[in-house]
Amino acid sequence: MDTDAIPAALEWWANSSTCLARVPVRITPGPAEGSWAAVPVPALAGDDAEGFRFLLDLSPYVLVRLPDDSTPEVEVGHDGDVNRLRLQPPTGSEPTRTVEATFRIPEE
Image 1 (tube, one colour):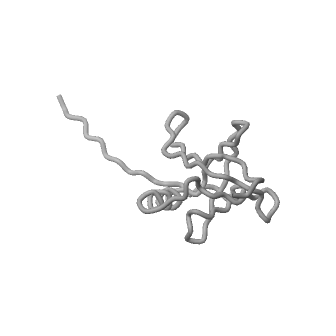
Image 2: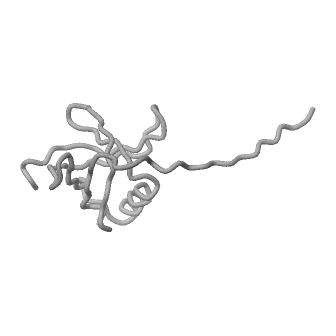
Image 3: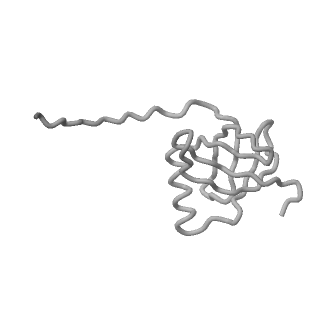
């Protein structure tokens, strides 16, 4: 394991009180300024890897919790291997999701 790697965690938050997922990682500086390479610890396999890929497909924008408890937002990328991740500052805004609902209130 890289001796310069630091422990961190990727976190997906639904709102300020509900964390949907937390994935422990070890991060090292990436090739581009402000970027990091991340490796899940332990490595993801099977259903865990598929669930992680599903979360990334929903939103690659997550918080990375660092050892000093700071939580910068990052965009997570990968080339098909969810055990080798690229973290970088967000490059765009998260796509807007439209939700439609119909509520029926019974008449009295």
